Image (cartoon, rainbow, N blue to C red; front, side, top):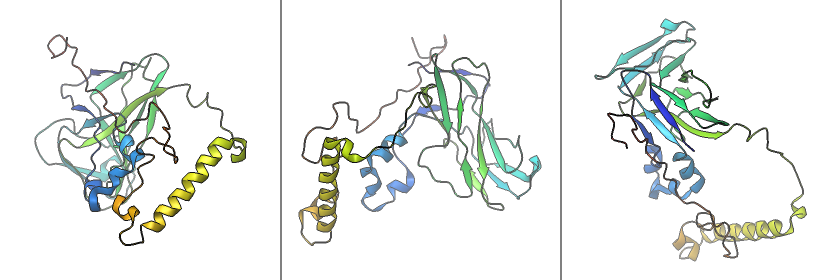
Length: 250
């Protein structure tokens, strides 16, 4: 899969491989949020576009384009605009993206990153044929509250996905007894989980020493058997290689 970014403006925001770290996860006791593998994988599941300049924006609650004020915090171009009004803050990415045939681009705010008073909107774009750029939009959820984006802070998160994935999916509901092997492993896990949680309340127990169950993190079944040979505990998206004649690529 090849994902290409063509610069469309003089200011080109930095694009980087998404990182696993989140400030609120770092602040948790023992940073226990990183024990949740689905959370960590989601954090890294794509690429981020970073703010080329810091700014502060405030919405007064109105529907007009002038009802959002934007104050620059430092030097830098490509500040967001108020193109749509209605409390929507619009970022230009500075790139035209292209994916391989049959693949869209999922575009959203940084995964599992929290920001008070504003919410990122999500879009899916057919980037395999489209000569059009897209914008990243955030909707204020509260008026009168200043929202701050620092220079270098991600404002956009994206990753490719197959266009036919959803239409080609055949969702079903079945009884768990229809899959005896899965049922037995689920019941074994449930018993193990309940026992572990009970042990957490017992001073000096093995559960207290372990702190958390690692069987999913390690990709194992409750009986210790390997669950999946392609199980991942981390993602390593590649950085964008500069293939321009004056770039650092080949």
